[in-house]
Amino acid sequence: MGIQLFSPKFEVEECLEEIRECLEAGWTGLGFKTVQFEEQWKKYTGLPYAYFLNSATIGLNLAVEILKEEYNWEDGDEIITTPITFVSTNHAIPRAGLKAVFADIDDTMCLDPGSVEERITDKTRAVIFVGIGGNTGHYTEVAKICKKHNIKLILDAAHMAGTRLDGTIPGKEADVVVYSFQAVKNLPTADSGMICFKNGRFDEIARKKGWLGINKDTYTRTTNSGNYKWKYDVEYIGEKAHGNSVIASIAIVQLKYLDRDNAYRARLASWYRERLEQYAPEIKLVHVPDACSSSNHLFQVLVDNRDEVLQALNAADIFPGVHYVDNTVYKMYAYAKGTCPHAEYVSEHILSLPMHMRLTFDDVQYICDELVKIVHDQSK
Ligand SMILES: *Cc1c(COP(=O)(O)O)cnc(C)c1O
Image 1 (tube, rainbow, N blue to C red):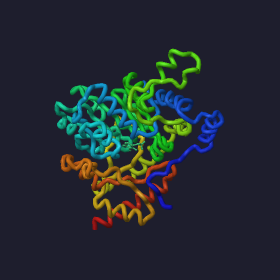
Image 2: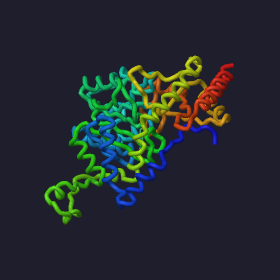
Image 3: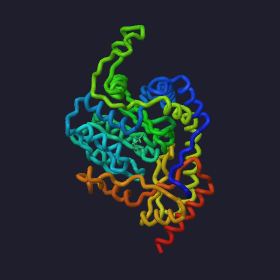
Image 4: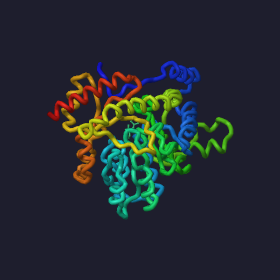
């Protein structure tokens, strides 16, 4: 089977026990475990609100849509974003009738604060910051720029479950933080996510929009019996976005082990670093600022002839990935092609080495041996 990029590991018995509770109670849907997990996530992150969703993608869509409506942004207003991300991040922008304006990245693979500031116009309404691979990059500087220019900040924390910045979970200064608990993320479920608004009213709106726009509150508040359970108002054209108790069961268990798992990922990352940093510039590592204690969702390197290196690694039974292709090469975002030269470079040179809980010290040594050999052969 070789060494895969990702290979999620679950606490199987504990997950099954938690799921069994749902099945025995006859409660697999919204509520019950979803509420329990939301409470635990708020406690873990220190963020004031958390709404459990069936994906981070829908969370990003809701984030942009709700901010647009509540702050009266107009169609064609701009959100500054990164070209080096999964397309979920950027699709949320045009989906809401807004324009994605791409800023360049720096040596952390995250948005370059200087480039963000350059892209601000009188139509800029928000920045979406993505913590690539769990790195906070220059998030603090970007948050300051947003504050200074009075624009909103959305944190796509899909890779950042467990990341600390200066010892605490970042995101308190953001208007909204979105996490992913998709199958291969650091807190793996099957598919799910969390949206954490700073503003409690927006959290309430998200909860209505996340279930077809249905508002049950007006009736449940005025009736104390179950007689009016079927009666509700519909305030929006919402989505079916909320998560369920079966998936929340897995999340509840995996959250218990998130810091333990991330500590092991940090060891894997340090083994990679120890072996590879001497090979610069042929093998370049990603800069992680000292203040950042990364979730190490990814371990990325930059190499020349990336595609050939990838193929040679495959031949050695090692299966790395690429995070990400510069989004401005996609037809959807081609209008911005050429505006982010560093992202373009990274797109051609970046490689994600295997990073998961099943890897051993020896696996890391083998991967490094092969990588060094391949890069050395290629430079001859
Ligand atoms: C995985 C990912 C998403 C989407 O998460 P889903 O839960 O799969 O919808 C969004 N942004 C980034 C950066 C991701 O890696």
